[in-house]
Length: 499
Image 1 (cartoon, rainbow, N blue to C red):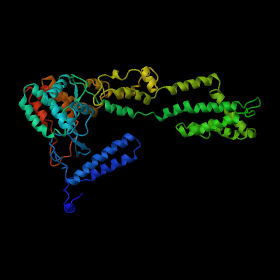
Image 2 (cartoon, rainbow, N blue to C red):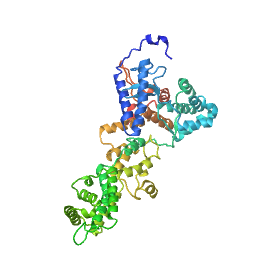
Image 3 (tube, rainbow, N blue to C red):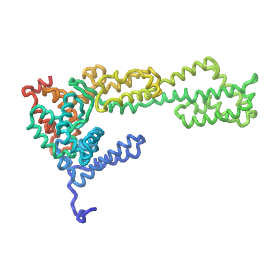
Image 4 (tube, one colour):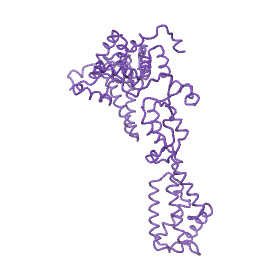
């Protein structure tokens, strides 16, 4: 409930124009309502919630937009949730709902940990058992760091294992005030001791999003629809009129159930018109199909009353069909239809993309693939039965190129295979290169690998909107990074590291 004096309380002075924020909110609202794709609408709903927090923070003064520490009480090293244009929402990326691995750890800690789960988990990793687990993670590389804060307790564990208790204590003094809110521990992950310079243009998750957007071109849709729907109806239509042929011509003899079968065929044609609109030729009024269909609609009502002109029209159409491709029952038409069915049955790019998606879902979404051979082999028998794709089918070069964008390999390989095709594309992988280079000044392999993970996570931070010539937060402002820097090789200069 508002306080009586709230109406007279002055609003905080804004140092930025709020129209940009309101415009982004309006755009997100429109997209959340008008876009047909459910995933697009869901993403827009989340954006609406975030932009509303920005608006609320601007109005209430809880956000100091333009400052390098825009959220009151939050230090510069904390990773903020930042929207387009550099606007902070007030949220922190290392907080939020508990992840599945956190829930699993909490179950092991017992019911007492549920009162303040983040504080309980952070405290657990300072116990003997928790430090031992962090030590195993450091030794095996069995961890993942999504935001820089998740590397803090790993750093503290390394310091304690190497006798630097004083620096570990100083680090923890800065972290403890945020134990109840932020994750300072990593997520468990598959072990990896890879320390070489292998990069990927995009992650597995980004690749799956691209594969989900693969569609069948309209031309292919028309070709398949023609072979699977309309040509069988066309052949039935021609066959129905062939049954009326005598030595005197067509439409001279009508079997007793001819009209009933004709009505069923007309109904099937009307249903196909509604369900299969891609093909254009069956709907053209001057096509042979349309001519036979119109005559059939007239003939089923009163076959004997069919005018001579209509009979001649049917005869002309049948003669034309016999000359061009052969009538139903002929070897020529049978061969043609078999070839059309064979082509129509070939898997489309969308069908094969679905197979790739199932394979990629088995790998961590935030990383790259160690080898393309893991996912680009021919379709197996099991996949064929589940996905409706022929066993042994291979993937076209266009889909393989999409998957190649998430392969972990040498930078030179990505350039030579034209995965990296320009300086702009090269810039996307430079943070991975920089992480490797920056870590080379650390001689201990465990600490070097940890530093590389933290560096890469820090480079994913979005820049803030800053005023008054302020600078963005630097990596060395993170307390745990300063602790690592103290253990760098002192006589290794920047040129030696880069070389």
